Image 1 (tube, protein in one colour):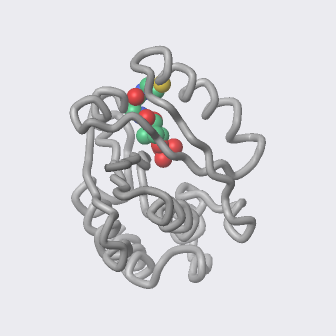
Image 2 (tube, protein in one colour):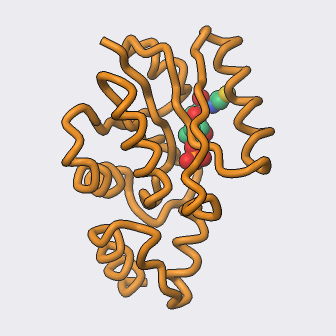
Length: 159
Ligand code: PNS
């Protein structure tokens, strides 16, 4: 079975992420979306919430599974028999850091990274901008799925 992992923070999942996940699902037998558990980074949503939102918005893709990991991505890959990572590349600004991680992951464990160019509709989109705009009352509809939009409104109302 051809499997690929799509790792990230997904705080929260955006249409940019979904575009990459959906296209990867068309290319691979199974796509594992892996949410990084990062205790040192403050997040808007808990890992459980992010996993749940991802499950909701990918439910139509039978071959997409949502998981979580902490530590090194290459260890998650080894533990799950995965040899390939897929990442979205938005712009040249993404490239340098992504290339370093890809080369390091290959050096550590021969894990390959494939880059998929982002749909130009979403090339400016990142979760941190969505959080910031939503926090200050800006309109993020059209950037995240409806269910995520509702969760964002709820969470920011609590703050
Ligand atoms: O959505 P993000 O925050 O840009 O995702 C970054 C992520 C999770 C893909 C990256 O930070 C990662 O793989 N972290 C796991 C720790 C690790 O393996 N570090 C070494 C990378 S060479």
